[in-house]
Length: 93
Image (cartoon, rainbow, N blue to C red; front, side):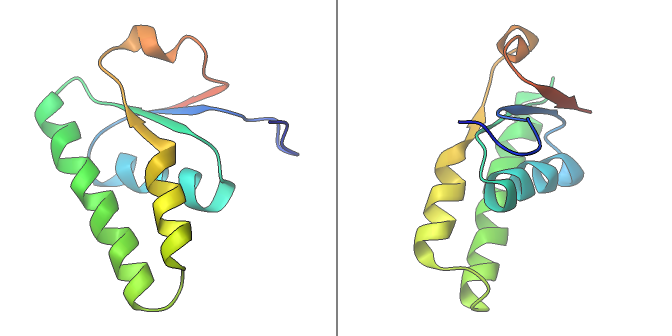
């Protein structure tokens, strides 16, 4: 997939509120697959449900359709380590 901005796969190194928000915006608005990692797997496990909650909120408010929420959800992947970021075009910390 070639995009005008040239970023095909971003990586986000932060499973907290800000990192998961960046992950969600990348997946939802830019429509690109996003890799998410935090050195604390507990933090990542908290962040992923936050993206779900934010998508549900946008859907309930009529800002996005159910299909858009599902597609955004499917674009987000939690990864286990930094080695998984080798193929990203941009890394946000």
